[in-house]
Length: 377
Image (cartoon, rainbow, N blue to C red; front, side):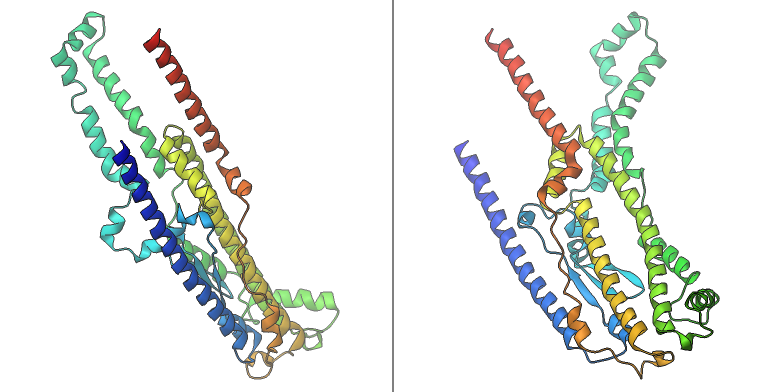
């Protein structure tokens, strides 16, 4: 036992050391990349505000110190995103995409369990479900008590079905593919307001309403550049489209999360995994929050560029050659910093798991107490 304990301790310290080294290296690279991105943003030449906005910025997720114990979903969702006008880009630098097919096939995931291990487990546990009763004489005993062959066969089949039906909950709340999601978003944006086209029907209706509200006859008489105004209105429209579709995705993910939490009640290992990811700032909720923080930053600096165009340029200057934004505005747009949510916020989403762990501990203690009484009395 001493040698076994020493071996496990040594392996644990080795794994911790490797993780600390890897996290430290990645942190240095992430910091260097963020500084380089900020320097490139600040050092860009004076140019039209919308072109400057398309130069873009990067958002990098800052991992918590506990990430060395459990990277959680961060390995799958990525740690950075490129932000520019009109669209929300996919997250980058996710470790799962860098693994080869063989490595991903070997990962212990719910899909791996359902697709490979569960069928083998079903065969292992049910191959002698009926024949064992026949060989052991239990079958004849059940028939002598009034049960029929059909009742015994369908009863055992139903028992096996309900025992493994829990694994079918992973086709509940299915997600659409990334391609289908982007296609729907593109269609909705294309059918709505295009900020680049001030001559579109919808832009003209907005123009008429603005002219009426301002009490002028033409866009040249406006106190602001209508091109910058319609650019921002188009940005707000595309953001609303993304919000609508992402809300559907988030609702489906939360549905999966609730099902997973309920299934995990029967598995202390799954309960600990959910608690571990939440504590280490790598759960579903923290990943969604990072995406929302990055998106809020994207909309902020794009709006600043559009409003600069709106209030400091004149109608007709959208030809990209006349008006140029001052470099001072670049520095006024702060660098992105992802706030780390406090521990009590993260653990608030796993209250069911916390209660279940306490229940498992109490149940184990009660079982030990009952076992001790039977053994020593």
